[in-house]
Each structure stands twice: as structure tokens, then as C-alpha cells.
Amino acid sequence: MKPVIYVTRKIPDDLLEPYREYADFHMWEKEDTPVPRDVLLREAASADGVLCLLTESIDREFLDVAGNLKIVANMAVGYDNIDVQAAKERDIVVTNTPDVLTETTADLTFALLMATARGIVEATDYVREGRWKHWSPYLLAGSDVYGKKIGIVGMGRIGEAVARRAAGFHMPILYHNRSRKKTAEQELGATYLAFADLLKEADYVVSLVPLTNDTQKLFNKNAFEQMKDSAIFINASRGGTVDEEALHEALVNKQIRAAGLDVFDQEPISPDHPLAKLDNTVCLPHIGSASEETRSKMINLCLDNLTAVLKGDTPITPV
Ligand code: DGY
Image (cartoon, rainbow, N blue to C red; front, side):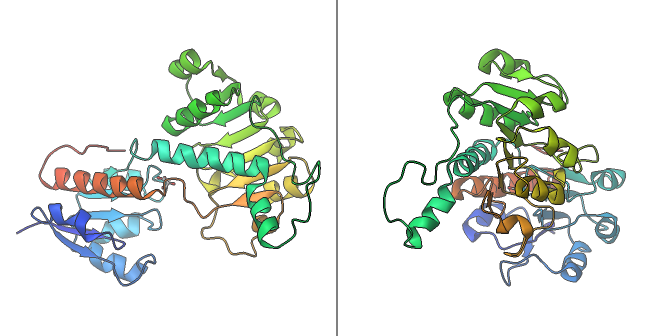
């Protein structure tokens, strides 16, 4: 009998096809919405492997009903939706999708930085709404990017890829990380700073730090108070790293100039979310890795991890 893999969202059939010889796939395919919790728990009971998204909470309750489960393959590099410790206690392998999304997520992070700095979204609305009447010296004048200091908090793979893009814009690169990154220092001239010093120095503060107990609300009132009043804050990691009320206050009080946010504490946000209503904020619906090519690579990597483990081989990208 083939092992059973439960896939929590509809994925393209042509990606699944080559793997059908190794496993039987069950899938939540009714609509492009997260699988209801009761369905997920029911399916978990008979699954040998699960391909899940960050919309699924893989917690103790889930793991307790998943008696046959050998692997959870998360279609994301971040895995704060999974209780990794609880999985480990049950000898269940957890995998994520690093590397394949690095450059795509760095592209989006830099695009968000530039869009926020130069008011691209506001400018598009300006044209669409018929407000463009004449050229004017300070019309929609933004902040320079070229030559300004970028401060990257969380210098992992994506952080380094963002730093490479910043180097092309002749931006001095400051970073804060759990450990020093010698390659970034030698190849890009990146300078390590203590968190508080980075906040004071950087023109662009970019959060790429994973969400852990240590980074919960790392960007809080105190952090925003330390930033320059011309600073632009970019978050492309997880919303939980930010105290959103404090950010809102900092933006309203012009303690910082603007923010570009791809992630939020509770997703999705509604159009009524206080941050979505501000003129000096660009809000995106968590699309860091969303290119067609990369999303397919992420799915393939999940499937490769699943089949490897279910065949008794070692996973490619365990967390
Ligand atoms: C990740 O991979 O963690 C992203 O946030 C989802 O693409």
C-alpha cells in the first residue's frame, strides 16, 4: 500500500503527477481557502505525510490525532505555525523551503522598500483618480534610496540577498544578527551593529528576522522611538515581530517617515486595519515569495521532502 499524503490546499496537478507513483494524495481542493480545522484533523488521522501552508496551525492537538504521521512539509521558509518541539517528541520530521525562495523574497523586499520610499502606490492612485493636473517641484516627492544607509535586522539568506541588492544602490549596509556574518562583511562591506545602534543609524530599517520567542514584538515603542524621524521601516518577515499599535503611533506622530509591510500579526488584515488606512504606509498581502516560478519550486521541494522521508531517506531541508 502506498503512503497517504494530505495536501492542505489545491496545488497544480502537473506538479503532483510525477509523485503519484510513490503516494496517494488527498487534498483540500474545494476552494482556495484554508482547510477547515475539523477537516484537517480528520485527514491528519490517516496521513503519513502532510504538505501544509503557514495558514495551518500544526500544534499538539493536530499531532496527537496524526497517529501515522512521519513528516510535515511546510510550504514556507518560516515555520512559526508548527510546534517543532512537539513534532520532535513524536519523531515527526518537519521540513521547510529555504533557498528556493531567497532571491524572489529579496526582490519583493527591495521592491517594497523602493515603493515605500518613492510613493509608487500613492502615485499610481494619483494618476488613476485623475488628480494629475500639472508637473510640480515637490509633487509626490519621496526619499532617496541610492546612497542611504540600510539596516538589516536578521541577516539570514534573505537578508544577505537584500544586502546584495542594496550594494548595487551604493547603500552602506548595517546589520544586526544573532551571529556575525563574515561573508557579508567581507564581500559587501556590511557593518555589524548592536540592535539599538542600528535603529539610530539606519535610514531604512528592514526586518527579516524569523518569529521566535526572542523576536516577538522586537519592533516596539522603544524601538520606533530610537529611529530617525526620516526612517522608513520595512517588514518582510512575520507580523509578530512588530508591535503594530506602536508602529501605528510612530507613523501617525511622524516619529518615523513611512512603513512598507508585507506581513501582519493577524492575516489577512481588513481594509479597516489602522495601518492600511495611513497614507505613509504600503501594505501588501504577504507576497514575499509569490512568483509563479518560486511557488512551483516550493511545492516541488515539499514533495521531494515528503517522498524522501516516506521512502526512508533523509529529508532534503529539515528544520
Ligand atoms: C515564508 O516562506 O516563510 C514566506 O513568508 C511565505 O512565502
